[in-house]
Length: 123
Image (cartoon, rainbow, N blue to C red; front, top):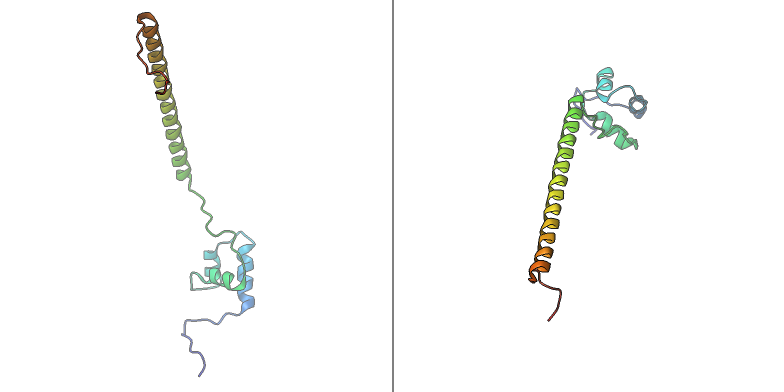
């Protein structure tokens, strides 16, 4: 008994597959366009043919963001930069406070001869 095929299934030879793949890889056309052009009904046909015949798809998983996505990225980047700037300013303010407290402590220790801070002396 031979293989049974559905009426809608086409037997496609390797040279046709290679022709379609080469046309796709030459650029300028999409897989969707080629599916329509050659009346190929199976959506993943070209991708599967490429795998079986040892071709690599240089366009696979390439995502080109839309212009609105670029605007979103720029806005998010600006928000991040603003937050970094805010945090750097807060950090500088805290450093200034620590320095001021250290100066007050040093002054109090000198002026009133008070040991306010622990000394680095091990017992």
